[in-house]
Image 1 (cartoon, rainbow, N blue to C red):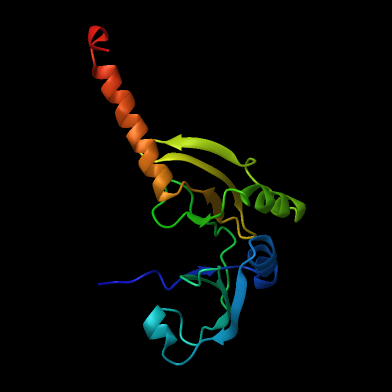
Image 2: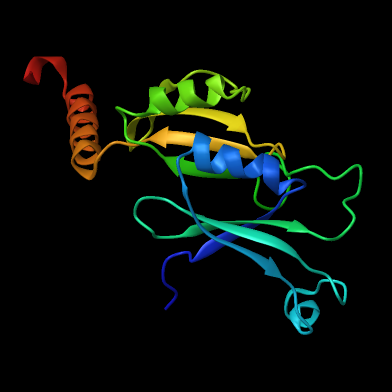
Length: 176
């Protein structure tokens, strides 16, 4: 059996621009800053022989799963761009934010000059309940989502209320 995600690695163009976004903007804790590359890395990661770079790891408050940013010592094609919805592959990072903090995260990012797509907005997901979210892009234009989710109890209550509404709608008027 596979456990939790240990880390997600993201290639960045400029680590010095990315670090403040994830550390100061998102409040993640930087746990490791190191050089990467050795004689076997090209076999294990299929990088060109001799490739290396600098990697920085970040953790959130639960310390489950980490984010690794790597600036490679390799040329970056001028037309390189991150994935977008519809492209095969990962196109977005999503971070859970407590409901009472999501506006603060949004305000902090906007204050740093980050162009957010929209302010926090609430939507109702079928069979799940209301979520509040907003999106922006990191310095490499990777889409980043911030979402406040209902508690498991709120999800159960939402589903029960929807079932009750459906049952009421199915009951003929004279039986009510």
